[in-house]
Length: 326
View 1 (cartoon, helix red, strand yellow):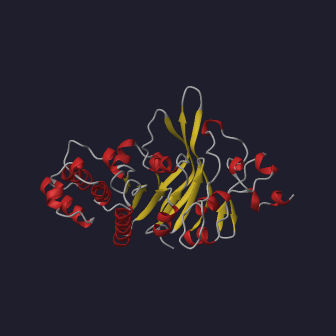
View 2 (tube, helix red, strand yellow):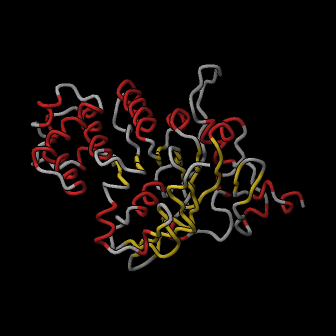
View 3 (tube, one colour):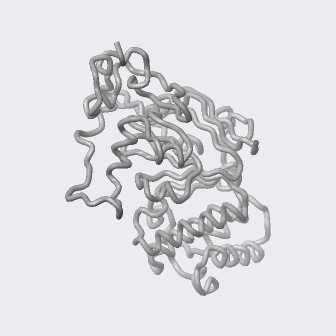
């Protein structure tokens, strides 16, 4: 068995306002091993990005707060570390590719300056050496003419180039864990394929683990070893990629997969999951997917199911419990 890089136990991250409490992440458990890719999927607003921001303790306080659970990185609880200790972890042992590179890169500094800053901070090398390593990292992620690009500003680069710069920055200190928050969302399909191929190659060469956040089930099929399906701040299904695609168990997972266009199926209209996510500030005590579920029965509106082992999957659904057949 490969070394466990990250283990999250019962993580709860809430956001507070004068009128309500929003449980954006409400009891997530996950495990990532060295060299493994975990895909976290679900609709916008289900808690995917908040989960990754919680790992790095980047939740803005106020209004957000991690109120419970453990985040064990290589056996050490990140929630017990001081802010100074976390600064040594961020961008070094754990890196993150943010969703929109144009808002993540500083517009008033060159690409090379921003890359070399992280290298100097975490690796303690001289300015000249850090600049050379920044150029080498740009070359490693496939940026043409890296010496020239290092002298340019973010607005002078295309969306694909900016995303490559973000990836170069994230892997510049050889992290053990890479958090990728929808890294291909703003890119066209050709550049998306190049970025995904590059991430696969880097993972194999560097041996790092990846948590990939996406709402694209096609992307996660290419990249992931395990899939965690989230809905309204909770895990509703978790299994290997092969298991999920061959035998999805939760009705929400089935709906996500049915929404993917397929070349071998002739349909006039794509499947749509009816309804919307529930109001997280007023969550029902029953199954939160019940109002949208085509298989719902009376018990689904009475209480919430637990996450249980069903075959090769962990599933949160009454459909596989004895109460369903009563």
